[in-house]
Image (cartoon, rainbow, N blue to C red; front, side, top):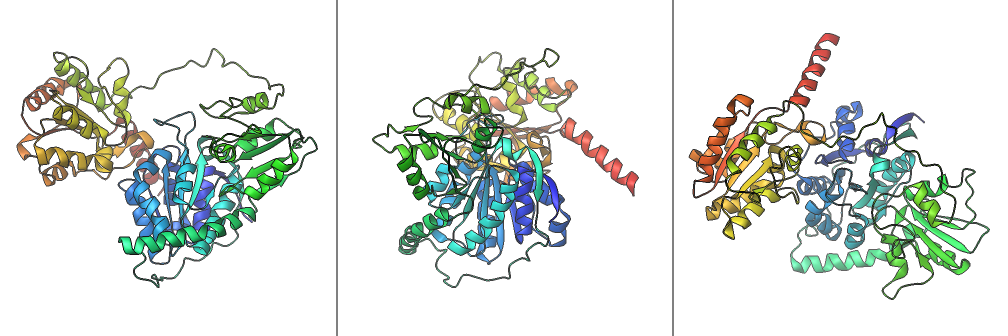
Length: 537
């Protein structure tokens, strides 16, 4: 079996290819981005003509993947945890329609919010949708579980959620892969042509089918090779753990022998028979899991259970990532050595890159907004969010993708003037266009600044769906062409940009300002790659 040094993300991607993948759909978002990027670079994907273009957002990605499944072929959608919020509608309903070809939805959670606005736990979405879930503890398990998940998806006729976390997604290990990739499925349309038509009369019957599948899903979990009962001699305590948290437990026992019985959960629903066996044998149960108290909540129940310890009892903190030291403390073990960061490593807050066009926009915007005072600029998620920090202090909100325009509209509806929205080109096509349409329909007096750097710069420089299309998109949504203003943001054009912003703020309707200049950092790296490719030919 070939052995490859893979990130957790890459292990999922390679497994999907080896499982006969036909379509890969995703929107960039740390820590999930590398799943798609690996497939985009893959010679096997090119040879097999696997679809591997970025989608406009996570919702369209899941819907497109479901369309592949509809034809009987295998598909994957990938996103970060907050992206699953965007995709929730098709995600939940795909459990009602069921699937034909295997459909795996890979979601990378971000405990401690390294690059996210929350640290939500995607396992709750899987439980809500009542579909199978997998949670690997190693890169090898990420590979093995993904292959298993495609087969299980077709066996039970449901999508499957693959849950990763940052530490696993972005760490690398040797992974044994399949000798021969599985061929792609043949085209096969649904035998029941109405099952994907979720009119109430159909949806009610499909929901009954989903409920009827739950007993099978529990049997699959109870018999899964990824759920294990590991016996231990000291029955004063039993441990339930899952995913990467299992590694933190084992790091406290270098010889690999935990004195207490352990239930290791890798496949969901929670295997209650294994856990009941544990409950029957031990005095107390400690639940160690990365993320929210998902397993713990199911074991505690509404009335509480004094036998269960974990995040609810304070034995493990509710906030942030786990680590071996936290686990050692919960087990009353001496913590390992903790090393201070050496003085040579100096902390530096994130900042806009030198020469970035966003700097010129914020300097101009601040000049205009000075007379209005703070609280008038609604922003979004992207590199330009750094405008909230010194020396700019230029923006006042950042809630979720696309919320800049809609919050500005709501504020204007409430009487705030001026109301300015700042959004990036890729975020605009992700989920900003519908908000602009709302404003156009009511001719709401807001000014939308689309900061166009021609790529998804924050997550690695992927191509933007908005490239060279922003003016046409805004016109198509109904913005008056006279109030769609374009300019190249440079130090020498700051005064001109400030004048444009001032004029559009004073316009009693919807206006759009598009400062457009390619990302200075990724444009340079792209040119270097192009020169290297030419030199190698």
